[in-house]
Length: 361
Image (cartoon, rainbow, N blue to C red):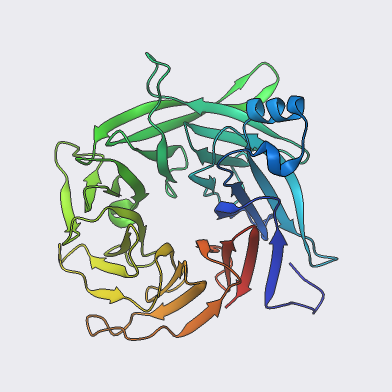
């Protein structure tokens, strides 16, 4: 994208609500496009002054939304291209990992269920809702999911019911609608002793079959779809604090990062040396909320926290201690999420309060 020589270092977008979930599009023709998910906990009639019928409509509609925003070349401002309703806050959202632009333009979201949406020029349409509890109205909320980069017909979800589910997508042609997307459960497994908070596919072993999960039992566990009868515990938090996030190194599949609930440090693990962290990144002064490895380098990682800081670390000297980050950016609020653009490695996105910022690194 040529921004006519006036490339800024920071672009900012203000949403009408608190931004929680966020993801960069990877399609080559949609470079500076991101999806944002709202976090609206409850609707307060007193504060807004809306009348009762509007209030009831909003309650029925679901209070949360997803916005698709893009950087406009001419004005070099972010523009909201599309907004659609979502029944609960999205715990995560993710564009199909399609770097060549050969698949339909799909976006997945997790909340009460996993939903796959087709993005058009003017509207976004729900393609399928994936629910593996067909016998009951009760659903165990999904905490996170991951979309397999090697096989984009494969997604994995993590749930508070202690399970991970691997889903297969199909696209078929039905009555004038091209590539109608549907999905089925490939496998469901009890992954942890308590709630599962995150899941991520590994690039190891071909990049299709191996994944890891973290959860409220404080462990990181590794699974192989070809041998689901056993799993490997890679790490257990010494205090058994719940682990909230996990993130694989994009260049070296031996390394992953994780963090504990309310923890101020990020732990780097090497799967070849289970249970012993190879590094601890602990310069944050409040709880860490996000981790993003560099897409193009095995030794750079960005962490973001409630202390308003996004820090980039160089971990080349592991296992020697990593004392300080090499770059620090201070936002105007507690940073909820950080995403490093996989197809544009010089851009990192953060969100805080109702703002999205993309930072050139």
